[in-house]
Amino acid sequence: MFKHILVPVDGSPTGQLAIDKAVAIAEAFKSAVTLIYVIDPYAFTGVGTDFSYGQAEYLSAAKQEAEEAISTARQVFASHGIAAEGSVVEGHSTYQAILDTAAALGADLLVMGSHGRSGLEKLVLGSVTAQVLSHAHVSVLVVRV
Image (cartoon, rainbow, N blue to C red; front, side):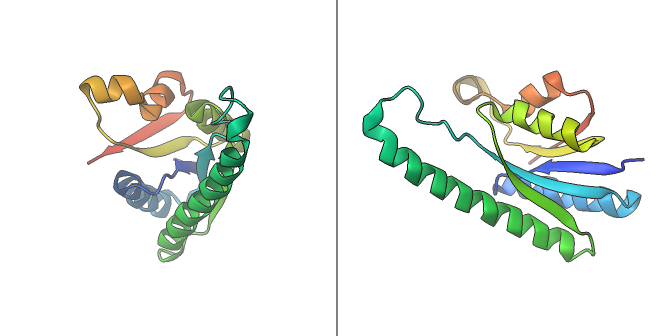
């Protein structure tokens, strides 16, 4: 039923629950799996040249965090005999980077966690998952705590 599953990872406990669900689905349907971690390479845009050194350090730290999250997720899939591809994706809009990657790969299922924020916290922080749900043209499984 699902030939290619895209799993955006972020290293969070909720993201780990999504990985566990994706493993079960991939086992059941013998699906290909791709893991991505989205980072915003332009997080310091518009704040001036005083922050250019900070931007370089941010990118280095973000890429290291991304690689660690992807590696951890890959190990979970590998322990179940599933080879998962993984990559760091750069994009100013996280949800759009996820959707663009899904389209480019021909993924037919997105499995992602939701932190379940509500009220002011959701308004201030936004919700990548909610934006993906609003704009996705493929099936999306949202895993919540």
